Length: 317
Image (cartoon, rainbow, N blue to C red; front, side, top):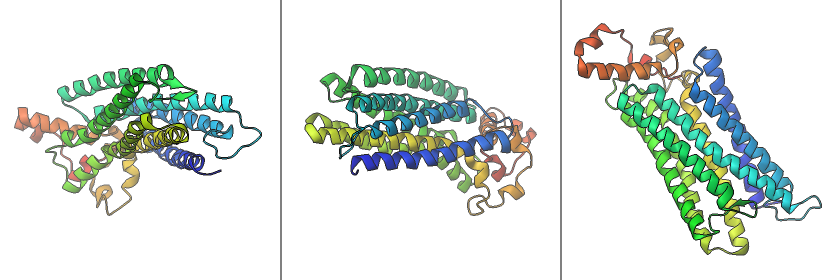
């Protein structure tokens, strides 16, 4: 074995282990550290994780029957490998849409502005429609020989471009929106940057999507083994993209566990108001946004409200 087979296998194992750790850590935080904090964003992310696990399992089965193999074994079966590959890719496409909805639900928790909430809700509807359409094309109209083939026709090539480019724009939208949400907040500068970084990690998943776009551009001009190799690479980066997206979506929820790193959160556990975490996840970011909004309308509202230290405002759960 070697080449594409080993790369696909290694990436699958790596992200299966990493995502299992972070998703279960997230569930631990939301159910044990912060009882009652479990929400719709957690539910959708769990669905994404289940889809990812199913996809990886189907990928392992496809490779067992000879997908991307450089050798020949007696148990290899091309038809069976294609069947499992088809299932692998379909669940990947569905999960790629679900993880975006999970990120949007996280942002919806910390957004108080009515206008931004409407924008997020509309974006979730768009992502839902986008997921259905791209899955139909990838797993139906543009599926050839048991896998998605964006180079199968000009229409499928155009759809491949559209899906990948729009995917990049969606990822960047959700990754950069926290900067707008937290603009002008009264958080300590370091804590504000940490909040933006944790909530915007999805931007790293876009790097894998950009690589996929380069591969799709090359596909129409590749033939034979070169085309097969590009399809293997496309699936590899699809696995990496979803794996990174799940990691990014879980990062902010692990904030209570990261408080034990003194260099990042000096004095947070000592100076913060005890018990505020029990109110719910992202509570202080929402309170901060609410106060900023209230100050614009009436400065006296803030002075009458309960005060928090800067560190306490970023008890993201």
